[in-house]
Image (cartoon, rainbow, N blue to C red; front, side):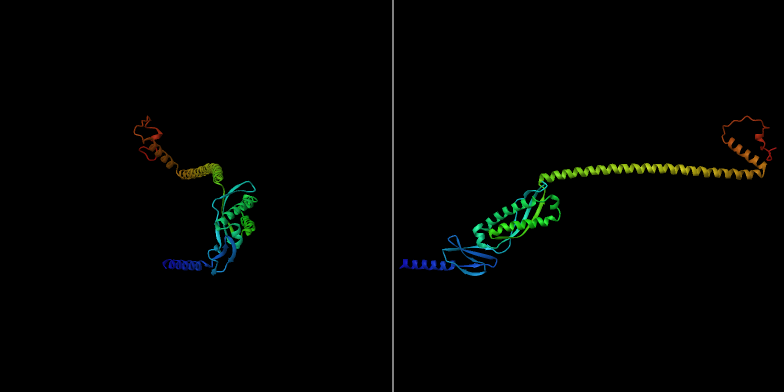
Length: 289
C-alpha cells in the first residue's frame, strides 16, 4: 500500500512537472525559437504564454533589442598612402531572423565573434582605399557609410542587421606617434631658433637706427646750441659795445676793476710793478689820473 502511494505521488509530480515545463513566457524584449532534439520547429516573436512539448522540445531566447559591439583590440590598418593607423570601432546590431541566426552562428557569443571579424576586415579594406588627408577631412562620414553597407551585405546571411558603425579612435601607432612627436618638436625648435635669429637681427637694426638718430639729434642740438650761443655772445658784445661806447672813461674804469678782481684773488700772487704804472691809475683817484 505504501509503495502504491509513493508511486502515485511520483506520478503526480511527474505530471505536474510536465505541465509546468510545457509552458514558457516570451518577454516583449525577446523572441524565441522552439527546438526539438536540436532542430528548429517554431519561431515565437510575440510576447506572452506559449506551449511546447515537455521533455522533447526546448526553447532558445534571442534579444529583440539593439545590441552593441565594442572592438576588443585596436586594428592596425595601412592607408592608400602607406601610412599606418590604429582604429577602434563601435557598432550596434540586431537579430532580424532568429532561425537563420541560430543556423549560422548559434548564439549571441558566436555572433559577436563573427561580427567582430567581419567589421575588422571591412575596416582594413575601406581604410586602405583612402589617404590620411581624406580621413582627417569630411571623408570620414563616407568611410563609415562604406563600412556599414559592406558589413550589412555580409551579415544579412547570418540573420543580423547593422544599425550603426562608428569610428571611436583613429590614431597613429605608439612608435609612429612618438616619431611624429619628435619630428614636430624638432621642427618647432628650428622655427623658434629662426624666429629668435630674426628677432635679434631686427633688434640690432632698431638699435643701430636709434644710435644713428641719437648721434644726429645730439649733433643737431649742439649745432643749434652753438648757433644760439654765438648769437647770444654777439648780442652781448653788441650790448656791451653800445653801453661802453656811451662813456669811454667808465669803460676804462670797468676794465680796470675786472683786472684788479682777477689779479688779486690769489693771496700768494706777487707782482713787481712801478707805482706810477697805468695799472694802478685808478688807485686813489677814481678818474684814473
